[in-house]
Image (cartoon, rainbow, N blue to C red; front, side, top):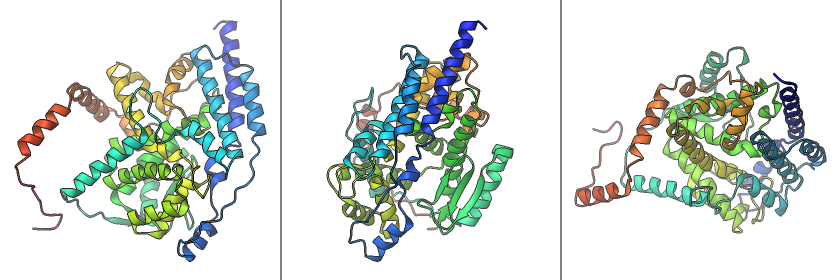
Length: 431
């Protein structure tokens, strides 16, 4: 290795370290969290008064100064430097967003980081709102023809915790996250690299159990642990809004490829996009809460769904938190990337998706960093990557089928079945 190459490696290490330092204070969801008393008061008042929310003050100066120092060493021309520059931009925007909580500025920074429902996607002339509405329309059509599914079997939090504990110990060994039962949690389950917390009173379907394992453990925990092992690139351990779309997209894709996703889950993800657009258009917390109450019939769940839209934003409407766009949008982008990369003959890049917290557009830089010996191969991979036989077969099949336009075939099917009566099969347990 030449002296010039070693100096370049040292520069990259230094910049990645500075950006990792800049990330450390950015605890997005922790800063935006609402105290439990906010929900208790709101529901006790019958859901008729706007919730009163306050947030801790956030000083963006340390993060911005660390980013500024990193930029002094970045020349955004090479693939690696362009990657570092994107990280710097996302980190600075994140710091400024947190400093603007409770104001319209929070939304302005957030839309640059996460997107907005009516912004067309890159390379594809469709918006997240179009995508969400398409999902809901398809689900509505399925409900209209009354396809019966077996009723779910419900499991307690204790039994789910025991099942998850066995699975993560088998997968992660001595680095397995702890499985913790807690009394208060804004969701049914949340994961960090060290623990998966489960709300004690929650109930889970059989699909929920598998979904938690594939989404939280095999993706979020794995990429956190793999990122922490990147001693030369500690930035890969620091998730920030610039990587959220890909991380959540991978996690939802894991639900799809593992067969653990279901229509109710897709409907909830699509509803989030519509609710965000409602808030952008001026709906306040009460209006979005009532929208969800009509959808769910559950005041507690309706509050939590509306909270996701308004945390950090303006309760009276016009400036929401747009992070929840990333689930459907990320799923679409990850699916397209994996299929397109496979069709282009670059299935070798798939494992790099799991070497830490990253965005899809970081992959070319990570290939170069891997060649330089700075990016380590990921130790923990989801089963569909470590044993990719099913994935590769599915990709081969989809590359084959997507060469044929579906529209003329759909038209033929409509004409062929136009006069055929609807087939109403008995539901599970019926004879």
